[in-house]
Length: 170
Image: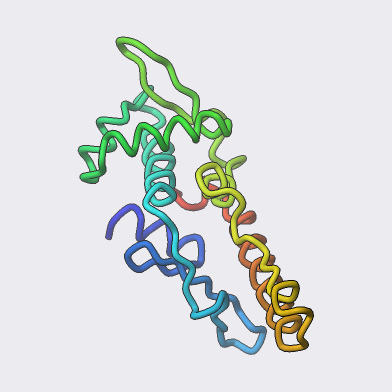
């Protein structure tokens, strides 16, 4: 099982080739799928961010981790990974040190970092709220659909906010 698959399962989400599906318990022992056609696509940069942060957290005792190490371990584009890791450093998820012996480490303890923070460090904001009702001139169907989409987005955001990095790797 890959690192990415383990992370997604522990967060309560299913990921299939850059798509992410949130499974929400409905209180009756069953689950309901949310977000449009049951999937929300995530970009390659978001996947790289999740993989990089998890790898660094899992190897935190090894000291600073080079982007090239992660790139080679998972066959990721080194250039794209470096760009992503710079964004993670700007968001205070990672800290970096340049030069010989440099690399990346977590900027904060893993129990303080959420999956939502990682996603939003490269994809801002998560689950943009739709404004369908404005475009459809406040038609009742559009108002109702917008309400459902907004509620689904908030549930997904809440789940990702609760998912701590420490639980994903532990």
